[in-house]
Image (tube, rainbow, N blue to C red):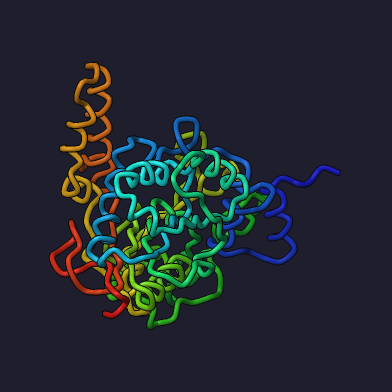
Length: 371
C-alpha cells in the first residue's frame, strides 16, 4: 500500500486531532523521515532551491578558517579542541576550511572534527565531499553529544531552519497562530487558544496593532543556550551566520522556496524549503544566560571585508583569465554587497572568555571558559 503524501497526512492528522502549531508544521515539512524536505530534496547549490555563501565562493570558508585559527592562537594553541559545524549542508564550508587549515598543521593535529547532522542522506553527501580531507568527521545528532573539550563552532544558515512559533495580536492578547483546515479542507492558518505569557512579550510589541504577528524561536534559543554552556565550561568560540534581525520586533518572516521561487508557506509541505529569519537578540540572550559572552554582531559584509575578502580575492585572481577574474569579482559582490548577502546576513560571535578576537572587538577571544 502506497503511503500518503505528507500534505495528506497532515490534513488527516489535523482532521483527527485538531490544528497544529506553526512550529510543528515547519518541523514536519523539513524533517519528516520519509517526505521531509531534507530527506528527499537536494536543497543546496545551483540545482537546489537556494545557494549558501560557501557555494558562492571558496573564499567564504577560507575566511571562516582564518577567524577560527585566530581564536585558536589567541587561546594559547590548546593541545586539543573540537572543531564542529552545525548543519553542514553539502560539506563545502568545512572542506574549504580544512583545506585552508593545512597551512597550520598544529591546528589540525589538535582538532577533533565533529559534524552535527540529523539527515542520513546529507551525511553521505558531506562524507563524500570530505574525502581526502586532513580530518575525518564524527557525525553527531545533537550538540549535546560533543566531547568535553574547548570548541570552535560554526553554524552557517542553520538556525533559520529551526521551527518557530507565531503569535497573533488579538483583543485577548497574543494568541498562537495555528495550521488547520478551511471549509474546503485545504491547509489554512488560524488562531488557537494558547496565549503568549506576559513576560515573553517584548517592549517593542506593546503597542502593536491588532493582527500583528510576533515570532518566537524556542528551538533555536535552546541550541544557543547549549552552545553558551559549553563555551562557559570548556572555552571556545562559536560563529553563527544567518539572515535575520538584531532586535525583537513584531513582523512575519516565515517563508517558503519551491523550485527556486517564493511559494505560499502551506502550498507544498515537504517539497518547499520553509525557513524564518533568525532573531539574533534572542540567540545572544540565550547564550549569555548560560554564561557565554556575546560580542556585538556584524553584518556578513563587514565581517568578510575585515577578514580580508578583497585581499584574498586579489590573490585568487592573480594569473587567472579575464572571465575567471570577473567570476571572483561577482562572488565578492554577492557575499559582501549591502544589497545582496552583505547586509541581510549577520555574524554573531559567542566566546567563553576575555581577550582579543579579530575582527569583532579588541577584548574577546577563545579563553578558558570564564566570563
